[in-house]
Length: 75
Image (tube, rainbow, N blue to C red; front, side, top):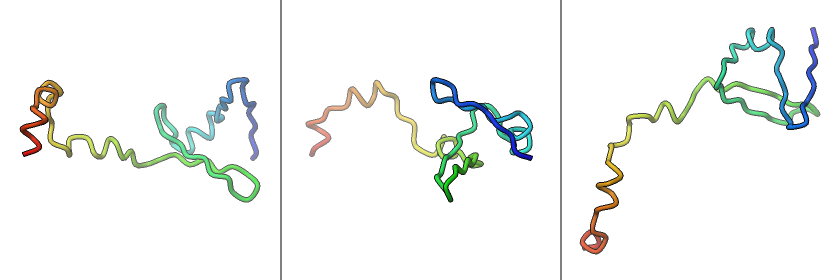
């Protein structure tokens, strides 16, 4: 069954609730748009790369970074 929606003056488009529920689209989900066969393919990302990387880099306080001596670090 085809469903329709209007594009707002700000370029926003509301995905009908039934389709959002079926596809598992939750608030905050990143979606990707791809032109395909004269239409538009909308895909939700099941993988959030930034969240996956969280905690994988060593933490360093900004104050420590700013206080480093750049001349000493060159040697």
